[in-house]
Length: 427
Image (cartoon, rainbow, N blue to C red; front, side, top):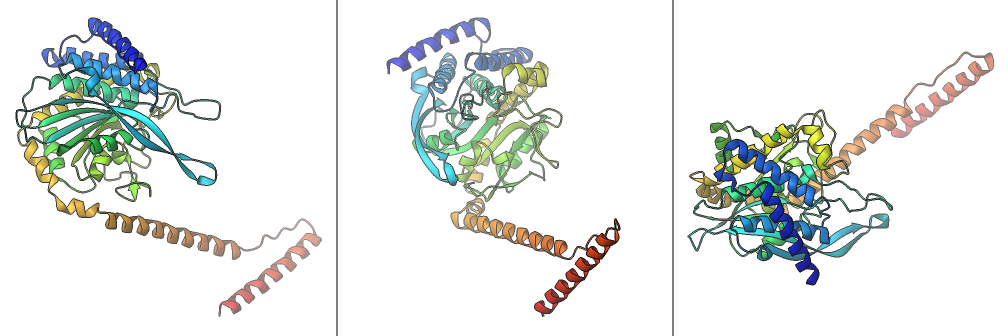
């Protein structure tokens, strides 16, 4: 408890100094260019002050306190009250693929914006704030990095959105959630849903929104009303966010709790909300589609690596491009949340039973086994063809000497006899 108080006081000092030099005014009180710079400053200050946010450690708690202190300056209550601790079991692989479970602790940072309606549903706007900097890479080294792209950009964008919406009156409640331990099987998302007693209207997730070649909006595996609604907002306002491509670069993932496969659109907190029947939107920066998916067509992947540092990320993408993407996402979410008809659209999506049937346990298990059986059959066919080609391949005859020629002819005769025997045995 004493250590937590020391961390909290230390973080408050850092926040006070940061506010003096960068973002003292709410974003919605600034001109567009200033808003852009302010979001960028939020990003730089967060990664600079909290470079090591290793999940389930005191460093992650320090980052959580830093975020909560900023939200307090926006009028969302007392910082300490926004930190919601939770325990979870981390699955650890041991020798011979055995799985052990280790108890860990983390915390979500949650700021609530309440409406005047006491029966209001809750819209969640979320991102994860931890990184893997101190996690082991080998027996003697750690992963390193600072989590600038993944996910300092998401944290900055969500802070800016919270500032924009601080004085806006809405018909529903909003929870700005910074998920802890999300890089360990989405532990923070599961904890939030378990601890929350209010009906959730929908979820908007932000991850890596300052990098990648493009920004994408992913909804679900089937057409949903909230996806159509948001696509229209993007189109009507000429927002530079792309829909999910037809080629989503699926990978077989039997550990996935929704479908027997995964892809980039499902690789974040939104997947947990989809699993719980909650209509969701995942906004992220990437280079999706094509033969191979990656963060960029021309730049190396850095997410979850030691190379994801503030300096390297800015060198790779440039300040202007990062600012532009951050500003695009902040303005888009701020606009979308205030759009007329949003609540009704998400309520319609909530009542879509067809999707519930698609994600039911029975259907999910059938799909998993069908994919595994299909994969086994495909491998069996390929193996059979490979063996047949090898068995029927003609022998190589060389003419280096009369002895070699005679030996090869004898070998060829023996192979022919074996093939005839094989054919006879098949009949």
